[in-house]
Length: 585
Image 1 (spheres, rainbow, N blue to C red):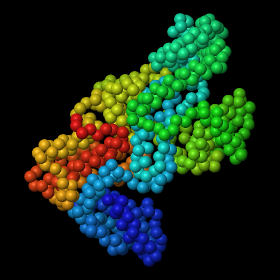
Image 2: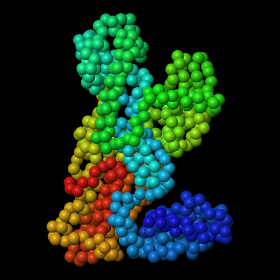
Image 3: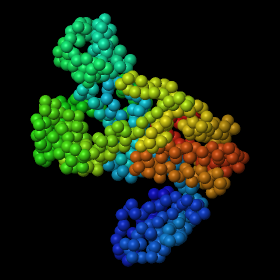
Image 4: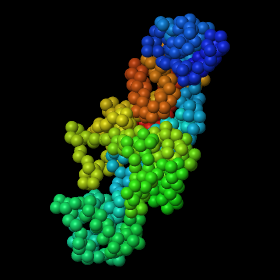
């Protein structure tokens, strides 16, 4: 309804171009908002105030001209000028019924729009290093990224979802050597576990799988493994020790053997991540490998593009990118003195490949510790001839778990963390998805486990699902009484929905399309969460105040049309959030 009013207003403004107005203003200038006080109307616009200066007109006079130019609509009772030049719209009684019919007719597509115009958007999210299971922080990124992609698709964007697998570099080497040391320990070798290794129990089944596959072919005596290595922490440098241990592993089992350990560890960790995300209801259209990116020449291609633009220089044996010329805080090394390409080189090559695959907008959902990442990747894109503003990077703040008043400690390297799988098993997927989205992504989140598990109105996901189930219960009661819902009669008698509670439900219900667009444009799934809570509250208040299955058939059908529309919108919204809409609770 808001969008239709904006189109009416746009048409009225268009009629004034050439005489009252010098030119057609941008569509974004013509905005309708819900009225704060319904005594002054249902919707309002300040378009006359916005255009008055450029038109050299008094705002009230311009507002009056716009009102006079409005195309007549039977669902608009009247439009009037108020205050300094606002235009207030009063809807006819049948307007809400008209929108109610739209909800029931469009069903699961109600609220969707063509705002995005089919623009191709790539949402990359989670992309956790496959060096361990997903933890609760990754879960928040997964819930946010999946829901944002759903919202953008509902708003008319052509969306694809992608996971970037960081399967190259030092962290993978550390995972491989961690698996190998556990393999040696399981074989009876007294090799101490490195302080900088991955210490979680999840490495033990990797080592067992390696024993099952390789037998004793990768086993070497502890003395051979440890001879000449620098001291590990706390007496020595843990970084030097782990690098020495990786080199020793390569020397003893060979490059092929080390690759075998790495590939096994990677494959099993990736399988766990894929399975975990699938169980969480999160899907991806593409899984892109950093290693494959390098092997297929994408990194070399990106460096060649930078070279052709004159953006690379040699210094102290390394190859540098002049990132400061494009707003970064410092220049960046892309190839080290030893000839090894840096993570940064991989990152900019990956983003160039996204653009070359035809995506006009790139959205990277990143952890809060990646705040310095965006400027340098954007610099790389600009240096390669791409628009810098094509890249967005919502930063997802940290999650703290609480059990009652007690905060649960977490630290990944020390193996003190709660996995996403553990969280899902304890509170369920619905609570996980919903609670992750209750706060804006740029704010830290305190996740209350006890509240998430509770079956009470204090639990927001339960409260919303209960509203959906209550409507289903009403329809079962209708059938048990030998009655049926007459949709035509219901929609034909919406003028009977005049009570304060019914008007409140109608006003809340019909905001859904506006909320979807706002949430998509602002990259703010939490706006949809808050809206669903408000709609559920309006419904529960109505449910407690009125009888739906009354003897008066026209009124009964009108009320059933209203509550079925509420159920449909709740189901649509919950589906976008990745939360189920149960028929019973």
